[in-house]
Length: 64
Ligand SMILES: [Zn+2]
Image (cartoon, rainbow, N blue to C red; front, side):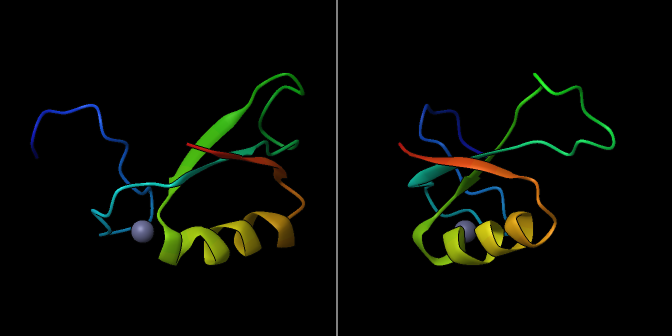
């Protein structure tokens, strides 16, 4: 792990630089105003978005 400001993908075992932030909320365990953030690289953006969207957790995506 190196020190740095570059955001890294949140996908398991992925160390690629993140290009987007996925903002999500699980209404079963999080308060409505709580917002969780996952970072995703280009190759994981789709799978992470699909994962969240399939569960109804997806709020929005922001370019970093
Ligand atoms: Zn990744």
